[in-house]
Image (cartoon, rainbow over all chains, first blue to last red):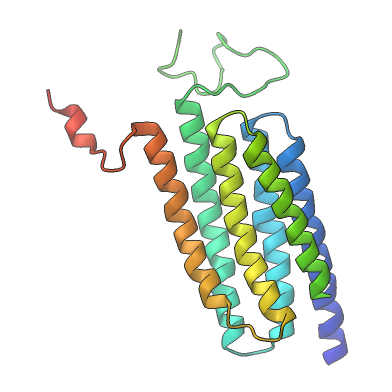
Length: 117
Length: 93
């Protein structure tokens, strides 16, 4: 039984490391602010979540597990708040998202209410 | 096994710092700063397990709370130019 828990936690930690690096690469390679936010959320949720779950399995049932659970909840509640605030601030400063087609001036344009030219 | 996680977090920290230096707008830098905060929490936790003393988790929790407040404060400062901005002042004639 302990061997199975060890194997599961190792798999979780390796996968978490992989997704952390994937988020970092996306943070550098993506073309504009909004897609970079998407890449950074991979690091926050998948990377951090899997690393912390793996560490929780390594810690066993103790106070450390509870603290790791608090850190996990902190990630899951605060990362969307920060991303939302960042996207709203960027839209307010008229940072244009890069789109495949020019959707400005169309009736179903995103964020078109009150910001017509 | 924790060594792999430490190396991965350090690589990602370097990439986030690259974006913070390169970033064309201020929002790229704020995003990279927030990522650096998240990775610092992960690094604290993993190094605690690597050295067998997981007492750094309290520092990680505090750092997470400070990270949220810091990011929101920077965003508010760049939007209003003032941390003590009051919405009611704008509505008054």
